[in-house]
Amino acid sequence: MATEEKTKEILDKLKNAVIQYDEDTAKEGAEEALKEELNPNDAIFNGLVSGMEEVGRLFEAQEYFVPELLMCADALYVGLDILKPHVNQLDLGVKGSVVIGTVEGDVHDIGKNIVKMMFDVAGFEVYDLGKDVPLDKFIEEQIKTDSDLVCLSAMMTTTMVGMKKVIDDLKAKNPDIKIMIGGAPVSQDIAEKWGADGYAGDANNALKDAINMISSLKKMKEDAERKNS
Ligand code: B12
Image 1 (cartoon, rainbow, N blue to C red):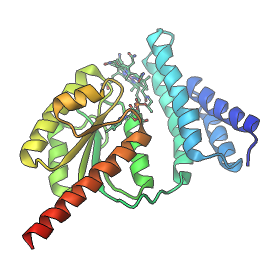
Image 2: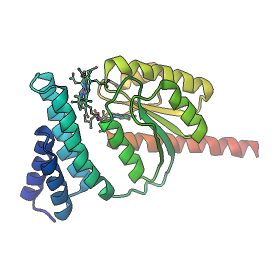
Image 3: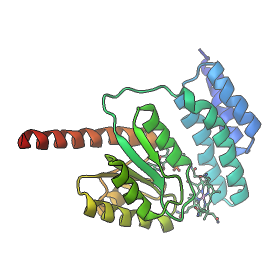
Image 4: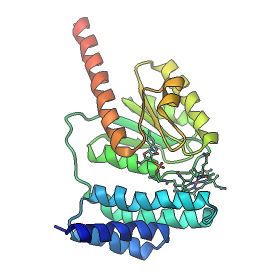
């Protein structure tokens, strides 16, 4: 078990590795986190993701540009790939199936992949469509897999509008389907206005909300079956 000081040192190392787009240090930091038995979830959110938040600020301040962002993302993924298999599995009593992807025109996939990771550790069945996903593909995949939940990610004000179309089309095909949206420009307000069933600002809350939605969906289906029998 790492001391408080050691934990802080490793979290700082992971954070700085992302900021300085240093893949070797990201690897070293992630391995050290495992060796010192840090909570992998903590290492991801308070190390790697916290580094990417700072990168966002550097981009806004025009100190970093797209090439730096790409290299920072690569360093984050090096750490994430090492830590992800060690994130503690959760048994929250509900397991669902989820279609997830980043909408058309948008190649930001780090947040989406972290949300996906939370669904994976909770034992959900996850159909990941990737990034820059044509809007119709979400509807096709939901029908094909009969998933309980569709999760849409968008990181740009220009691409988030595509979510509204997916919500409208999905609800027209199946009003019971649950839809959750997220990503930096999205808010609870927008989710409500566009008719999504949920919004979450981060991956931990995404999982909590998904569990609530899927539980209520399953209860609704059970009640309907009971009435019909
Ligand atoms: C890294 C990055 C990139 C990388 C992405 C690499 C990758 N593989 O993802 C690259 C270099 C490719 C990139 C490109 C561009 N980017 Co960029 N990028 C970023 C940056 C710095 C960080 C994003 C990130 O990964 N954050 C870390 C993750 C963990 O956080 P997150 O994505 O927010 O996800 C969390 C939550 O939002 C939530 N969540 C996310 N998805 C979902 C989904 C659901 C269902 C739920 C419930 C929750 C949820 O949970 C996640 C985990 O907790 C942001 C800045 C910022 N402040 O966000 C800009 C930013 C998103 N980019 C921006 C821009 C403008 C661009 C470019 C247009 C730049 C250019 N001139 O080319 C291109 C667009 C390319 C395209 N067509 O998509 C702008 C968007 C502005 C806007 N409002 O529209 C931002 C906000 C920067 C800025 N301040 O201007 N970018």
